Image (cartoon, rainbow, N blue to C red):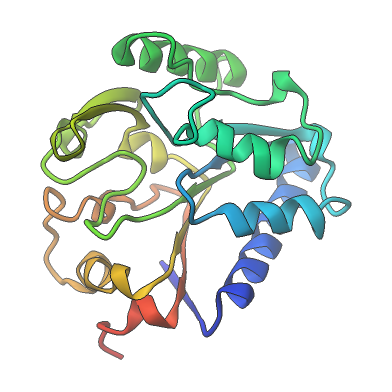
Length: 241
């Protein structure tokens, strides 16, 4: 694990963008494509904007394929739909072709949507081992990541899969990568900032004994890949030196 701490969000997002670009260049050089899993919510908006502007001419975007690590069970035109946020901030500005974007079909029931999304991923990898080049993750102040929330079925899901999950505290379903699928990635990067994340971060990377049911982000530990945390000083205020 690599922990990178930044004084400002601008420095964090710029360094994270450079990191994304570097992995993209390597992946395209080696495999002629870059399989990139986006994270949702509001946290990555500045990063996506940076990639769509300053990073516009640094990657061959026609060789990038976009996926989503989780999705909310809302219509595609709902402001809470992760795909819509990405569409507005990075996909449309870069003119990404529709066949290079893998949206979750939320017109389907959550369980069916998860099954169909996994099928689409399987087809894209064409029988090869499913190992994404880079998965971006966020972390909630309850230590959830993707839609692996505390005390939910996904915490104990050991399949390399996409699954639906009912999140009781939100009274809604989500569609999410499982931790074993995330852990097969070549690179995983957490984007975490803000004082409200300090308590969760303290437990996720600071505790000597794991309690994944309470702190699901502890589940993320790539098998053969690299794990990097991009965090700001505010989020690390409770960590011991």
